[in-house]
Length: 256
Length: 276
Image 1 (cartoon, chains in turn blue, cyan):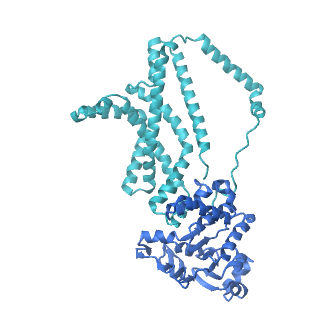
Image 2: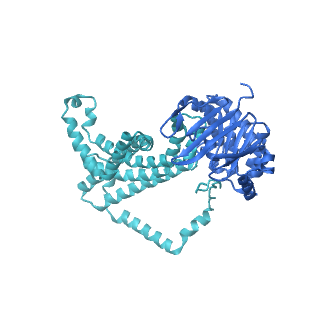
């Protein structure tokens, strides 16, 4: 497929939990190489939106397409649900997700965590997976740690391992769900540096973050969510330099 | 934010030098207590009647083997049964969940002795009524007592351990399972690669305690004529008219067994990579 096919496309996404409507019609496109930063106050729906992209949350209405392929959905009482399990698993395997709480598998070593998906899900031969894993671990600065267990590492190291786990599957797009929010302040930098390097390589990313300075540096496109709607979006210079929405102006002031 | 600290690395506590580990044992009151214990032991050995012991050693050895075999086999089979019992209670369809839950509740809520007798006298008598069973190759085993002891102990262990496993399954952090799903793992693979090993891992520390409890439950099989260690000692008491000596020996053997088991399981636990 050509480069014009969006890596991630969200059309009129709605999500409600019971009677609470969290997303009220969001449309968003990330082209290959885009780094989209999603900012907004807590409860604005930014994590929910991100989790809809790989169907960890199922949308109530709307359509999501990954690299031009829309999820096959079927109607249920409350909304939608994935209709094609095989397709869901195949698409998910192409989307790497980095979680706020790392969510590494603690019974496996660093290397075990990184080769798990390539070997088990993608069916890559083990030797090849190990070789690749060593490359990506080197990229995130964990080459020495491959035999360590997650419990024996710092939060920053664990999150870098989680990033390596994503890199190992060569994802079409990487989803970051507040990757530094659970880290001690002195460990935030090492994780952001890794993400910054990846952004410089033109990897497609959608990044939910509270780190405004980082979003401004790294993002090619910034989206401000307010009460389940996109209130304002645009290039970072415009959004941070000359925000139109009064809410966004206030949000940026409150963060700074 | 998680309420557990998942950021700070766990470091093993450094071993103290031998000298400072021994120091607390050398305090005066402890020395007195140790002296008294040694005196008691000496009195037990010299003043009591142990002349019967050499003659009964082979029988005691055999009883010990029976006890250990019952313990090991019922723990292994019970654990194997507990895994599906626990898993089904967390993920299974409603009827299976109720069934497993009911089984655990009934077994855990009634005395083991009662179960043993019900199975031995009830099932044993029932089997005997069917010529098909009496004629089958199984009958030479089914007419003995130990299969019923084994079955009862297994069911009991499965029920208690099943409850532990249920908790272990429920306690695996959702995020770890979510990560597996987010990477496109099919449900069965999530179970096989993440949920199941993590649950077993979490259940292991309690296993040691349950095995000790199981060891202490084994003497009940003596009531259905299985000659385990306890049954042998009872026979010694009947034959020698001695009350205390055989019982003291029994205590010493059970203490040694549970002590050895505790140490062995602690060692095993230390070898399994930790992670919460």
